[in-house]
Image (cartoon, rainbow, N blue to C red; front, side, top):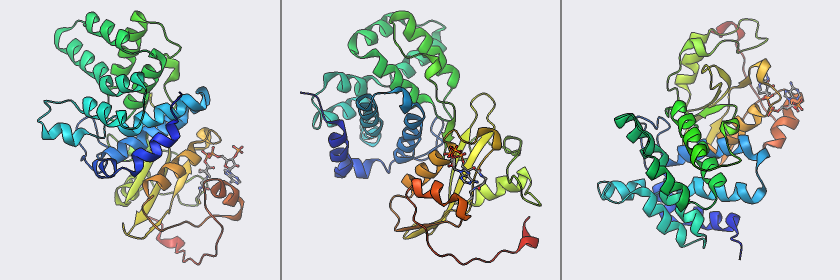
Length: 315
Ligand SMILES: CC(C)(COP(=O)(O)OP(=O)(O)OC[C@H]1O[C@@H](n2cnc3c(N)ncnc32)[C@H](O)[C@@H]1OP(=O)(O)O)[C@@H](O)C(=O)NCCC(=O)NCCS
């Protein structure tokens, strides 16, 4: 019988082991996003960018994998890495889904990384190991789609991803290729970001803050999500939030560069920020009446607002 992946994910998300483990992780090499929870949000944003190409069932399966694949890194660390986090993820998932291919995906999801590391070390692809991987996985499309979602993050080498996809397609055909890479890199941090990546914002402001000031605004915000152009790192859109971390948050700024508007970036950034703030009771923003339908689509309701604006103090 087909697995109900939406129900399985809801059960996973209610599980105390999942809830505790996703808090694990601090910003580090390869993972500037920090916690597993932030990594999950990052991959959710990637999934949203390619969901138009997926069946609802394929999307639900990939979302399940997103939420489970790295959730046992803390347990793996407790064994000094002797037991891989993929094996923990597989055993945990087996409590919720009867689907050997999903379990294989979870167990082997870091094999592309290991193959690449071997290639870097020896200069040669371990084609036997890649061949074994291609045999152990039943749905190669699903595996490659997941590898893209998991690797399409700031801090990971995009060249490595392209290299793996090419190698994977050489051993086994798939509908997935580099054409599936999402249009934007989404990140919740300021890794490898400078003022040179921030031109063109504050469109229409009488005295727009400079890119340097923009960077200070991002640095001073409690939460930031950026959409960046993969080819050159330019920020195409950003959203910020200020929060007390207990009850409430405020969203001061959301903007997408004019050339990138109307492609879903603004909606995606808003939804990912709302998910990032999912523990909080109240989230407020102030907008012009014409933007109310846009925010209503993201789950906001109109309300009354009072504000002070000191135009002379815009830095
Ligand atoms: C609002 C904004 C962030 C939306 O970004 P985006 O990436 O284009 O958003 P999406 O593609 O997810 O959604 C686009 C939809 O938003 C709505 N929308 C965007 N700007 C709008 C505006 N000024 N008036 C009315 N509707 C608007 C439209 O319905 C649009 O749909 P369309 O593409 O079919 O016309 C972007 O237009 C922007 O940066 N505007 C200037 C800054 C701003 O107003 N920020 C909000 C501060 S509260």
